[in-house]
Image (cartoon, rainbow, N blue to C red; front, side, top):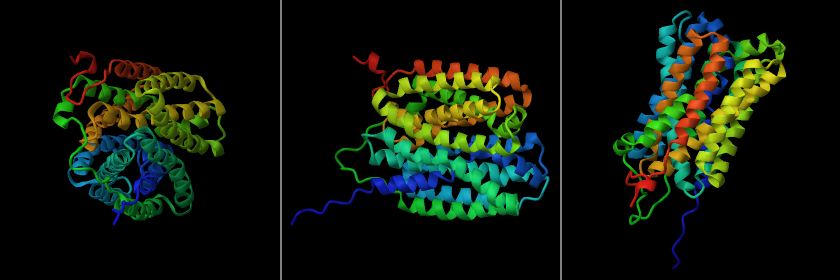
Amino acid sequence: MPKKTKPNRGPLVLAAGAAVQLLTGIPAAWGVFQQPVMQAYAFTRAQATLAFALLVAGYGVGCAAGGLLQDARGPRLAAGWGAALLGGAFGAAALVPAGNAPLFLLVYSVPAGVGSAFLAPAVLACAQKWYAGRKGLATGVTGAAMGLSGAFLTLFVRGVGGRWGMRACFAALGAVALAVCGAGAAVLRDPPRPQSAPPAGMPPRAVLRTRQYRLCVAGVALASPPVLLLSPEILSIAAARGLPQSFAPLCVVLGAASSAAGRLLCPAASDRLGREPVLYAVYAGLGAGSLLFAFARGWWLTAAYAGLTFFYSGGAAVQPALNTDLFGLRCAGVNYGFLALGMSAGSLLSYAGSQLLPLPARHAAAVVCAAGGLLCFALVKPLCQTGTEVAKKK
């Protein structure tokens, strides 16, 4: 009798990954969270911005832990823990008393960032394994959903939060995250692989010793300030620059749509053109967008912000594919997690800049960071899977 072939689970994994990522794009939508959180919890601007910075920092640190768990026990367990942490963080935020910023940071910002981070490497590594020949496409499809998350969360916060308050909004998001992310986690499963052909790749200890890792993590960190120096206050900046107050939230929605487009198009382009040329374009776009944002008013401001989110998210979506190009698929989850530590550093750098620098200086810092990131990736050279640079291999 002919041997039965197992059905291709790849499309189902992509669909589940996209559904999960729709709940993890909180950084893209924080601009619409910030003011309601300040009002509902009696927080200052600095406290609300710190909540955002710690969330992104928790994401970077959690990627390393989530990647370790994913590589050791598989994507289903890592994503399941991520769903529990993210849903629990939303639910706990609904119960925090007004004025207690430290408790909010402890029960919401840190676990929400870590939970999102447990979900992301599980989804990305699993999708890349099912589509090993089209890694940019795999990360682009799931990444586009993460970009659209900003639009979804904006509508959710303004709808549910605007009618019943921010606490009810957090409670509802907790229930949705547990249901959607939990169901998505149950679907994730690595593809079967022949015992004779394990995937090639470098172990994390070897990766951390390479010059390529240090350059990549620095480049990831420097991509954050052009967007994170501005995004928490995008609604107030838009209103001050002449955009009608009723239209200011469109900055967040259009930024989220542009983020989704960047996450889909940039990795797909990198499959055809190469990772580094696309990353050069990403950092050049971040620099040009930062310059335009510094002088734009009205609807031009919206266009500039959409450009920044396109390139920032597009670069973030190319990183997982570059990670496996450089270091292999064998430890893709944990290696990407260590690369994501750059996001933690970049978010804390951005928080410090947002508190210490006036707005014009922030614009200048964004341009300088974009130029620095481009230089970092210009210096990255391809590696053999033994850790030797291809150019130096005899």
